[in-house]
Image 1 (cartoon, rainbow, N blue to C red):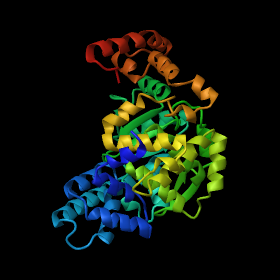
Image 2: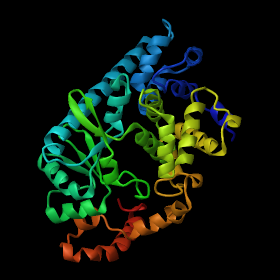
Image 3: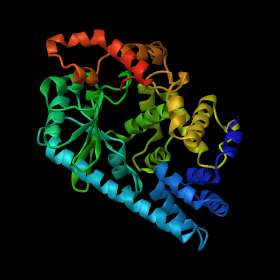
Image 4: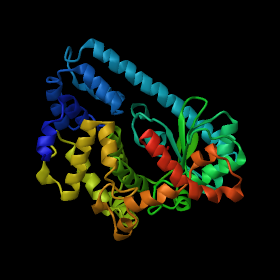
Length: 400
């Protein structure tokens, strides 16, 4: 199916939401929005799609300024208003949790760190951070500091969500810190906090200490936050969201927000992408952003790489979570969705090899089911493949 045909198969609601996935609209875009507003058959569906695609407050703001009296049913205005208030309330809890992390855990213990994505991105680059839905907090911490940080958080009532059952028991906590790149906790406020010891799955692109040493600090609501410089963040977003085939609309808004910021310098972004070996990824993402500015992402305006990205993004947006998972099984490597993103080194260390290695690597589930003292934990490397195979046979899925 060509891009034009795939776009023609999009619902009117999704076409409108694609147009609304910008902080600001040009006059041409605004007119296209007005034209689509007149044709929307199901405003309840549009409100629900906007919520599921994480752009409800922004869509509500744009529609309020562009829709004329009576075009949107009053009941649906109320649905969107209430849904937007729910997002704002959640974002306030996120902001409170981020402040608690900085003031109660990170600064008092001088833990090297930086925040990336989510609330720190919205606070720095959005004209109104409240319109950007943030599901969780992403925190990068060097591996040697993760144990003490998690121990302190668990002592204060945080609950491990992934891996399940993690406690302050020292041998088990140390084992989890060694075997998991990311540990997710739920705060007493109910906010997910992801503690990362590296931000890419393979470790081929980023060094944690170098990122933290190169951090920038900006002040948000009277608090200093450590974050990535804008060029580094932009390239990382391109890498991360390509792996997920740009399946969420608030990621498109992020690209727009960063490019509108006074500190954005395309030449600096291109130099950063070249250093990371991600020039092709950056170029394709910029094509995606340009293509989806208009309701017709025409095929002849895209390179082959851009075509792949736009095609799969539209496919993921149409199909939802199941389609995103299906696309994830075609990844070229743990961090790369497409072969054209990969250098020879990345291709040699591709997804299949990664999966083979991962199959033999133990994780906290091994320790939780059969706790062993540190001197005997090498045994997990022998038993893990059998445990995973047994789980596959008995449950139909690999053990999580």
